[in-house]
Length: 144
Image 1 (cartoon, rainbow, N blue to C red):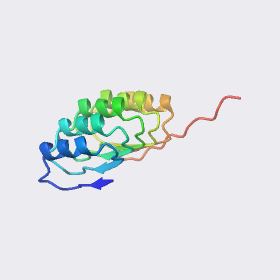
Image 2 (cartoon, helix red, strand yellow):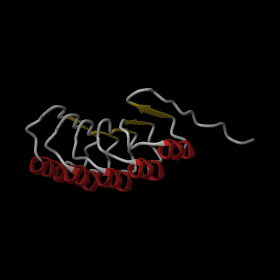
Image 3 (cartoon, one colour):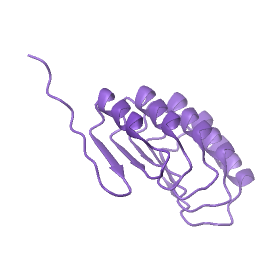
């Protein structure tokens, strides 16, 4: 696990180098690393397929493209914190479609709508946290 939260001086170049040499990385906290972009998350998704937790919250340059890469390449993800990232329903739906192991996702923003919540409901995510208010979705009982 690596916690780089609020390391404002971290850049894409350093993070790409880290991703390419840390294939066994399972958890990374990038909260508030305002100089990183989609390129970093795409590199992590490509090189660190064992990721279970990623927190790029409050990173203004993390968009749908990065989240789609995570959803596509990181099948072991259980926790994703995208609070205050400029993502849309497309990213959330990609996580719902490909994130079979996701149990926690944190979201915020005006671009997340009912369509994203419905996508999660259909894939039985056990817990979805939004910045405010908190929403919990329980897995429905198995049919008899």
